[in-house]
Amino acid sequence: MSLFQSSATPFFLHKNAAPVTEGRYDVILSPQFYWVKKVTLPVKREGEAKKLAESVFEGSLPRGHYSYEVRKAADGDFIIIAYDRQAISDALQHYLTQDARVNHVYLSQFACHNLDACCSIDDASSLVNLNGLLMQIPRNCTDPKLTMETFLEEVKPEGKPLRLGTLDEEVVERKTFIFLAAAVALLMLALGVEYVDYKHAASRVEAQKEALIEKYDLPPTTMQLQSIQKRLLRIYTEQKKVRDALMRLSALALVKGEYLKKIDLNKKDATIEIMLSDAKREEAVKREIAKTFKILNAALTDTLLEIKVAL
Image (cartoon, rainbow, N blue to C red; front, top):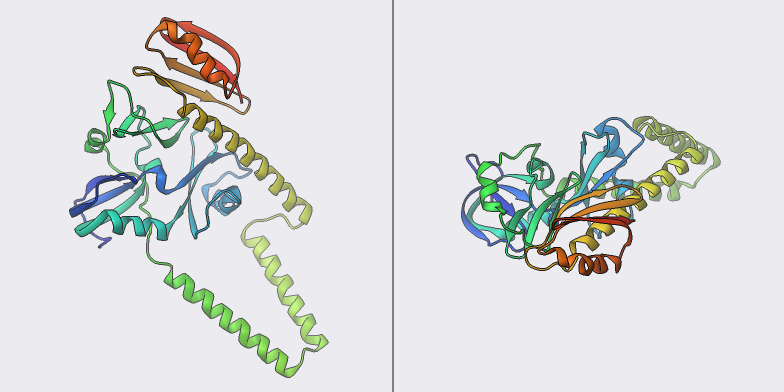
């Protein structure tokens, strides 16, 4: 499989996609292949935010070797994406076989950022834009609908493509470091550890600590680091609450012809617009929402139901 072909056809890769055996493709990855969060951080530039990306996802990712992409949103928040390069490479080899060629690989969050309507991927799932984050939900769009096939005819992938080489270079460096550290330890054991060596080693560690603090522009005291940790944990908790709310909303038991028209969320509440198939469905839908949310108020205009719920 080559990563250096040109004149490629856009190919939206999701876990139910049909494998292809020939052609050249610009692969656009479904949100199924990465994790995305929109967060507020105490920094201004994308490069500074990328240094904090691992902390933002701490404890919320499956086991793996992750890389991160960061894009600053129009409202000043940061969109941070975590992805496992090896897992994506394995997926490409599974879905593009034989004479199929990969030109570039893009994240749909950035490549399809201009998507502003529900886009049907297949009979069972759709790609939607929820407050600036693209998500694949387990539900098809209602008519009239935009299909992924139609959308790909116009899309021109934006943003830099992912680098998906193997981790061999990284592994070699790690092994070299381990071997060197072991050799130093054996040498010190053979010669005996003297007090002066300990002092020198302690000085080197302190110098390395100072270098890391300067390189990553970290505060020098433990109290300040803990303050940053608490702030990031609070951000993570708020984002998790929003994500959980979106998952519950996507699972609402709506009947044929009904769909979520709009969702506005903030830290405390969410306003939902639902297009009903019939105005008589108002109370049934409100009861369904009340199973998982506290309804603050509701209003029905024709068949458009607007509900505000607490998060």
